Each structure stands twice: as C-alpha cells, then as structure tokens.
Amino acid sequence: MIRVFLLDDHEVVRRGVAAALEAESDITVVGEEGDGAKALDRIRECSPDVAVLDVRLGEGNGDGIAVCRQITAEFPEVRSLILTSFDSDRALVDAGLAGAAGFILKQIRSNELVEAIRGVASGRQYLDDAEVRLAARRLRDGEEGRIEDLTPQEKRIFDLIGEGYTNRKIAQDMYLAEKTVKNYVSNLLSKLGMSRRTEAAALSARLKERQRYDA
Image (cartoon, rainbow, N blue to C red; front, side, top):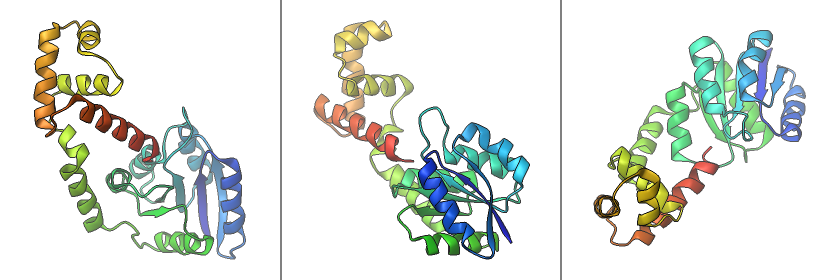
C-alpha cells in the first residue's frame, strides 16, 4: 500500500485528488494539509511514502518547493512529487534543487497522477537532471539571467522603476543624489541591453507577474 500525503491550499482540489487516489486499491491518503508551515508536523504524524505538493499556496501559507526542501532534509525516505499549474523553468529548477522526485502539471489526468505516484514510490524519477540543467541554462540566458548581472543597488533601482518611481523619487527613497540615480539607471539599462526606461519597467512587470505564477 502506497501512503500519500497531500499539500494543496484549495480544499476542493485537495479533496478531489484524495478521492481519486482512494479509489485505487494500492494507494491510501494518510494526511492532508493546506498550509505549508504545518505540513512537516503532519508528515511526522502520518509517515507517508509520497508527498504530493502544490507549488503555489495561498498568501501566508508558504510554498511547495520550500516544503519539498524540508522533506528532503528531514525525511529523505519520503518521495516528493511537485504539482504546478504553470510550466515554469524557475519552478522546475527549484524543484530539482529541492530534491523532488517528480515535477508534473496539474492539468494531467487523474490516472496519470496515479501512475506518477506509483512510479516515484517505486524509485523512478519524473524529474530529469538534463531537463533541469536545460531549464537553468534558459533562465541564465533569458531575461532573468540578465537581471543577475546587476549589482544589488542596481537591482533595487530596477525594482523601483518597475513600480513607476521617477529618478527624483528613487533618490529620495534611497537617500542618493538624483544625478547618482541617473548614472545607475544608465548603467543598468546598458547591462540589460535597453535604451529606454520604459523597457526596464515593462521587464520588471513581466518578472513580477511571472513570480506570481511560478509557482
């Protein structure tokens, strides 16, 4: 019998997944939780073989990747299967680094989820190392990679540009001379391969939106 723990902040979704799993003769759901902060305590109580973790939990409820990382450190015998609604390179890389045994989209059919649970329980990997490396390379080479070239001060100014701050407002907020801020803006635009401030603001907005759904 495969013992499964479910982490999902949507109770209706969680109960639906639990019902589908309980219909299988070789799977039993031994615990459920909607809050990432409480997940480890529940896992200690129910000793699952597989933990099915939703990446994106509600505000204040943590996230599945962080829980996966904790499970890997404290319960290496428990196999983590990451569920996400969005196909994200960032989530894929983070799942690999956290020690997940699998990474699958929520859009899969229930029978495919069942097979994935059986697979990771038997030792199979549904998260290919080569795939994780490729995702990491895409991140480095893409928009997020360019942000990594910015200094901490430039990143802060980049974020404020995304929030619509003018140079004067940035200067006031960061206790800098306005001319200094102007120089920082010129440098960060050059590093990002951009010529206009509006391009940086648009990139900042895209990255923030992506962070909301990575997950």
